[in-house]
Amino acid sequence: MNREPHSTLDPERLARQGFPEVVYCQSKTTVQVIENLRGLAAANGHAFGTRLQAERADEVLAALPGATYDVLGRTISLGCFPTVGTRSVAVISAGTSDLPVAMEAISTLTFLGHPVLHFNDIGVAGIHRLHARIDEIRRAQVVIVVAGMEGALPSVVGGLVAAPVIAVPTSVGYGAAFEGLAALLGMLNSCASGITVVNIDNGFGAALAAHRIFQQNFASAP
Image (cartoon, rainbow, N blue to C red):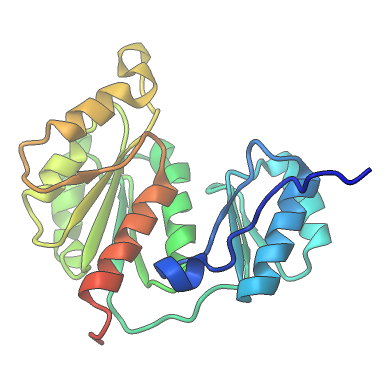
């Protein structure tokens, strides 16, 4: 009896969209994760997975020689794309508790070949920390801001930089934060014009939004 394959991979996505299919590992079995990553690596030369739980990482790594795992970001990489040019993405996390989501974005950007400037724990509770780094942040061509609680940091950054700002609400915060809903609504209602907002804890989505911006606006620039 022939069984249906568990996944239908999309190896043409790289040519069609400028980035490859990525494996969302969380709801898949370990065997499915391994087989999907192996298949995409065979097709594209590289493969990437998100939300791989730490307790399963060793088994996946053992099956995929050369793969690397980021514990905080819960991402796994088989190779990466070459770095092109010097244009960078700044990834800012408001607090240390937001770091896992920021690392998901950083790992994704690194896999796709983008230089990253990382600024951690510079949220609005100590606004002087942001002011101390703002000149460095302004060197980036795209800025990703990761914040929980009330989600105020993207509005502040959005009023200080000219680059596109992508806001990522996180599920960090006490009860009335509603697992990131308060931050999401705060970012959607930002008074800083033109901020793009992705879903709660979606560092991967923010990185892909930045990648698309680079593809369209900076494809021929150094």
